[in-house]
Image (cartoon, rainbow, N blue to C red; front, top):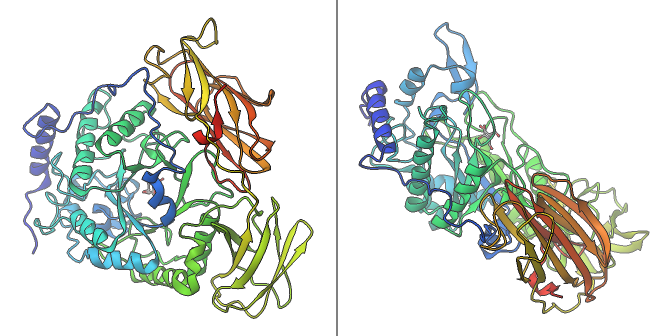
Length: 609
Ligand code: FHN
């Protein structure tokens, strides 16, 4: 049923008036963002360690998600014919790249009718692919909301030819809940449509509407995750989003729902923003330091639907990307772009189904779900190795000629108790060789996309878990450790996101303070550990009296690393000197080793003086 819409100009004017009224506290005023978070000195915004928190557990286990780019741009299907008859091509950026006049873009959006959007079919396609969470664009840069927002009328309910009784986000929420998979929303901070976005004088009004929209999304659909975008410094319109805006928004969202997972584009895509990093169209060559991460990628060359783009990734590429990502401890968010009617293109469905079939075959999905990086072996040239408990999964992309071995370089001593090829069950000959082991599989590769050798190991011996209470911590209300410390206490961990307003104690101002942690750190393995600090403004670390990290020049959020040989169960002396000179403040101490995956050093392994 084609829904009559008034010309958007009238609608737009009313909408604009409505928006302005809204922003002036009109009848349905958006939830105003809080003034500076009512927290201030003594606040630490780090509520947990995303590497180990229950809050992020599902995300770290599920590994593989479906990204959906769907919006008013989809209605053009990637092509716009200019008045002069020339054709311009783009997808979700088409308004901007093809310089479509606002009124023209609004006019085309008024015909948008994704009547064939079938949430159950989409969820079915995700499940068939083995994708365990979905992130759909709720609002892209064009500002068009895909739900019946009350903050303006530029949305799928009030400005389209779509059935006004439907709500696709609600339909998707119902279908994902029924299927037991998580739902997240992408939300662009950068807004090409909102009249208040570009002007510094009215940007606060835009933020009020944005907070109002995000509250609607959280309250009405209970997403597990918010995937921000459009945070970068840009023009046309100028993007005024700041780091402080990101800090405020993250604190606000966690007050709305402390279980929410938020990506690092809530701020400025940094290591201290949100819960995870977001490399795009690329896979980091090794685990990311100091932050969880998720690689997002298109299946062809466009995020939004582009009817001419047939440059599809092969199933082998998708499967091998997924294995590379999982073996480096990351997640893979693979995109589909539904067409103007809301249908996922068949070539996408086909490739996703093949990927899912590979994951379901012979338990090969165990190399991905709940699996992750292992420091026990070096990444081989012939594939990827992931770890899940006392099992390694060697995923072989290039199967060796008969009788030729696959070499595994061991980074720490461990023994192999057995190995078999998933899918054939044929034995794998394991022989100690040089700096590790040679695996010689028998028979042909069971799967052309990738074949997996399941390897049972006896891991390095761990000392019993410690019973530490944390480190002694002294803080000074100056940034030079001068005079007696204002506060001395015990910190369970070194996991601080003071951001702009927080500090170690209400007696310590949010700027110009210094903190010293002392005590002992107790590893559980006899291994070479990597100590990682994430600091803003300065940090120095000593282990057993020896300086191992020295980044004493004031800096914005930075990662520093040191490798130290530590003895299992031994209490090694540690001292950390940290200063905050002004602006943002962060300080985290993480560790990792061949047997220890990256985490904030836990309290039970830290001992006060
Ligand atoms: O500009 C967007 C782009 O359209 C797409 O949404 C990607 C997906 O992460 N993010 C931005 C580019 O980094």
